[in-house]
Image (cartoon, rainbow, N blue to C red; front, side):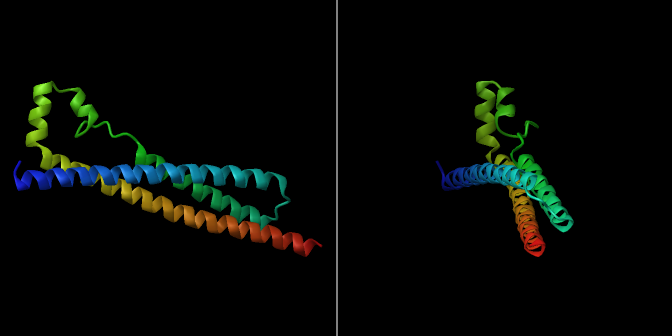
Length: 151
C-alpha cells in the first residue's frame, strides 16, 4: 500500500469516526431534550403560572421542540445511495471491490459533506437548546417571583 493510499484510508476512517461521534452526541442531546421537555411539562402542569411565565416557558418549549427536530434531521438516514449501505446493496461483490478501490476520494468527499451537514445541524440544535433552557429558567424565575409577590 502506497503512502497516498494509507493517507486516503486514514482520512476516510477519520471522517467516518467524526460522523459516529456526531451521531453519539446527537443521541445524548435528544435524550436530554426529551427529559427536559417531559420535566418542564410535568412541572408546568402542577404550578400556578402567571402570563409572563407561560409566554417565556412556551417559547422555551417551542425552541426545545425545534432543537429536537434539528437533531432528528441530523441522524436521519441518507438513502440517496451516494455512499454507504444503500449503494453497496445494489452492487455485486466485484463491483464493490472496484468502487471501493477507485472511488475512495469521492467517498471521502461525500462523507465529509455529510459530516459538515451533521455538524451544522448539531450546532444549531445546541444553540436552540441553550436559548430554550434560558427561557425555561426565566419562566421559573417569573413563576417564583409571581409566587413571592402573591404572599
